[in-house]
Image 1 (tube, rainbow, N blue to C red):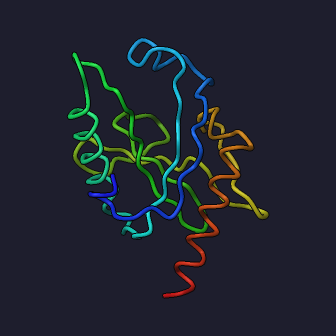
Image 2: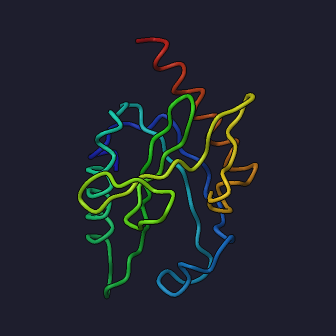
Length: 145
């Protein structure tokens, strides 16, 4: 990831992924998740290309037709967290190349908040705290520009 996207400015601890069994057949049990933020800022219009790149990384690391990692790129700004996905749904916007964008969290009254469609894990205090922290890093970056 660093080779493609540059140095990290934040890496979360590994978090147990227990909010759904959606990935269990492919990955097995005991799935963990981590968040990584990169120093290099991206223009939002690059998100679809980044998702295509991360899909290729997932494919390259796959064994016997099963992924060993699931990479869900996104970006945040001062007002929202956007995730990229290949799955269409009523609240998602088509970008390009089979990639959709979803506003997963929005910032209000001093912190990120969830929408009705926000994935259950992204609604947890633990995840919200991580995104608030990354938002603080981002605010410092754009202030310094």
